[in-house]
Image 1: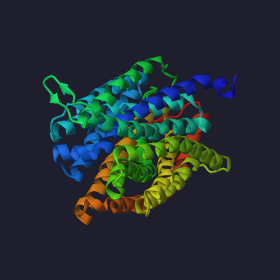
Image 2 (image 1 turned 90 degrees about the horizontal axis):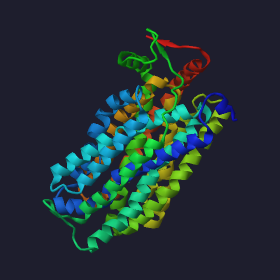
Image 3 (image 1 turned 90 degrees about the vertical axis):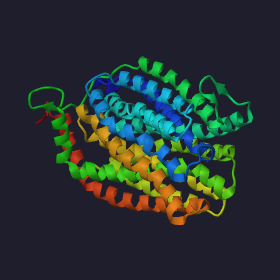
Image 4 (image 1 turned 60 degrees about the horizontal axis):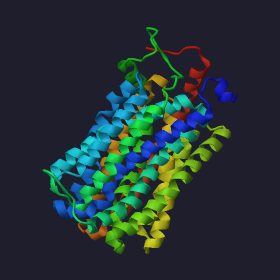
Length: 452
């Protein structure tokens, strides 16, 4: 029996089985979410819309209910079955992804993308809360880092499979559905990638709901914290949570800007085909995912072993600087091959920074608030990242450079600004986080900790 099992944690093998299921689910969610990035040009052509309008489909439409419903769903996750909440969420987002494929105009496609966000709002807050109950603090960052590879795995598979899928469908006989009529190639692609994800809803039912740990106790002796108590807890630590959320928003902003526009940048700058850039960027993200997990976990654990209480946040800051440098290099490279090479550190950096930041958040937040606090995190991070990332690049292109061929310079501007703001806010956060981490250590040593 391992030390973790003696402390009441599930077996290591089963805990990693759960991480594998959650990571695969996260991968599916990003395939459904990111497939649109490969189809920007045909969607623009068929719906006759601008870069800015496309960016709203990628970002704002998805972010609206993904962020607004995240907190009430997370409130349920902090009290009820997290695996059931995830299963329902998977079912909703897969069906809504398929419905993107029967949209006949911009408004219908926008509403379907909103529905995808509703479903995905159930996943990460619940998943992060579950993993925090499956792993002790020292190895929790490793589990979150592996889970976070779902971002790069999903994006990678979306790029590789999606690129070939779109080109294959475009060359195949058109698909005609009753009532809906003939589908464009990009519409068929949405249906093909959406419905198979329902298998993950079934797999989630094989996961056991873990025992909740590291709880605070409310003033009335209840094991549940009221919404007022949760808001009060965060409000009293506003500087730590605020600088964390805004700093990590810059990481998300850069990541979503690249996921949304890198394929189109290669098409416009170097005339690459959908399948060519899909294959290249897909391989980069697939390679970057495992490397980011290793980088984030080793860096965080190494800094922790050296005595840094802010180890995870320090790792997030270092990783984000790597990402911003990679983004600038990819955008300004003189050749497509060199640009692809720069995408490797850019992808590793954003993924590792996100994993480290999330692991850090779980370590300073009481169990009964982890899903809610994660949802609040995603509310801020996605409102900023999902909207300003894709739309920021599009607005630089449409309104500053006023030239669709200048897309690469728009990506460069966003990379620089995201890196600069992240350095300021994450740098400020280090001292705030250290104090919060020291405070959180008392929860493990005290029999009960009361919050009013």
